[in-house]
Amino acid sequence: MKLYTSARAPNPRRVLMFIAEKNIAGIDLVQVDLGRGQHRSDAFLALNPLGQVPVLELDDGRLLSETRAICTYLEGLQPQPNLMGEGFEERAFIEMMDRRCELQLFLRIANSVRHCHPGLAALEQPQFGEFGVAQGQKMRETARWLDGVLANRPFVAGERFTIADITAFCALEFARGLMKFRPGDEGMGCLQSWRDRVAGRASAKVF
Image: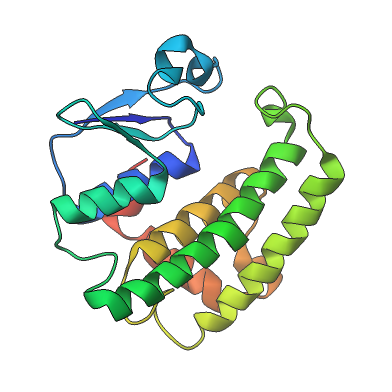
């Protein structure tokens, strides 16, 4: 299989971290240079007409995009260690937290960066600065909520590490790099402690 990825991009990092946690070997990585616009080339658009990474090319030539869909496939391919839930009840609660982290934290961070960071002006046209600032504020509301969640349990979805932790961690690392967001600096000690623990995992260093 081949994974079309891009260095430092947050969604590919989620898949790479998932792969590392499962210790899946044999997937070739193909770098797509977003800065040079390779994701808009005819060759890449033939892989994903939306021009987004990551894309997983299966052994039979089929193409799978969207981060969570790729992770679902990999979970089925190699079920252990389980990251998406054992049984329908646990799967449902992990998915709930994963979706909250994706839509309320990750997406808001991405919107803030895309519309406020001058380095992304070439990738995001037009930029709407006021929208980006508002998304940054809303992201902090979600981060404060998550800080409260982590005051009562060790991981985002419960007692063990799951895909929800990967999504939240990659979101915060994206904000850390481009928004200079540090939860501890803004009174979110539980979120900062969780981030630091996850950063110590071997999978957190694969990106």
